[in-house]
Length: 241
Image (cartoon, rainbow, N blue to C red; front, side, top):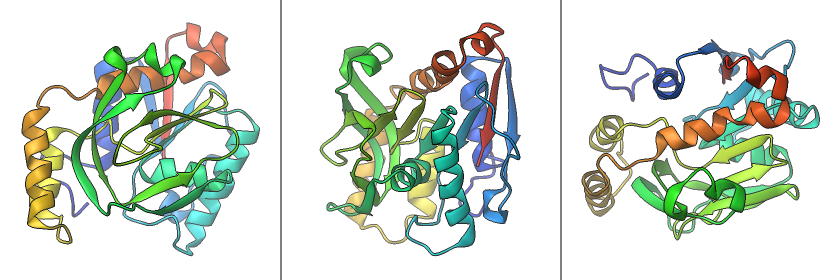
């Protein structure tokens, strides 16, 4: 909570605002995975989203081990699963991929990625994805079942699809320019002045051009491919970790 500006009540609230801006017929449930709270049962008509985190996937913590076990179970049951930043790393790591510190170091700001998968191209115009980022760990080797759909010069495996029911992103569709601006000015203590200036310039350059809503629409389409009947009632259910 210490990284949040006053106008953002919680980190998850940014996801809720994003999905509500695309479809108002959504229900939400929040699980406190830090305290080992996970759903007792998994449903194919719900989307389970693992958010960003201040923790590292390498840390030997019980809740991280339990989260990795949850991911493997959801994968085996073909449950719609989404990973953002830490969630992106956790899903890849849980399913046999490799994660390491980025060769180019910490990166923050707004960056443009290239869409390289034909399925993804139906969701993003001009074969590009423009979103906020704030990371230093990256997926260096994909799980065997994974397909890269977005890539950039900074991050090779920017966006990944696994068996068409799991979608992960290194970047942040939920971020707003104001939130990232707050992070850069108030909490980016380890970054150089050059990195901060470059990040602030990217916010100005791409002002109003980020594609969070397009990413959200694709995320919502996950239930359509897994459980067509549940999609027809047009009510979406999200669980956050």
